[in-house]
Length: 129
Image (cartoon, rainbow, N blue to C red; front, top):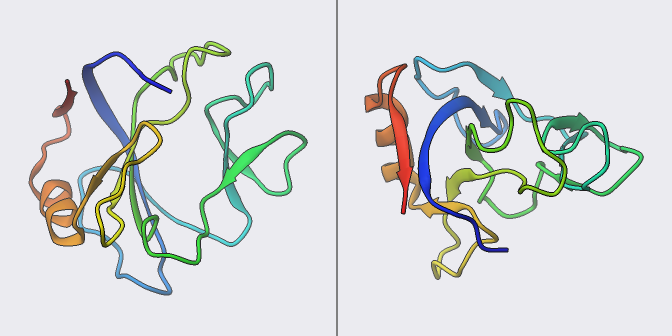
């Protein structure tokens, strides 16, 4: 669904260690495992949060067959605290080869995403317009 714009902090960087090296970053990093997910079910007590799968309600699997979640930057959107139904997860991640649309995320080519992770400072914000 559509979301409003704003300035969002980076919370953490997730990555697939079997496919990419650990990103150099001033932000916390977390290796993605096969049982990692993100709860996107309003009303769940883990709504808009990292979860281990299987989870009791629908959650997006972060371990994908394609490469788009090989590197994921988690932005601080509706997370302090999460409000059920107010929107879940704005990720910056690797774009599909054809740059097809995302479901409310920001998709970049891999090198540009790595460049942003390297250059942004701890207090930096990502502007979504």
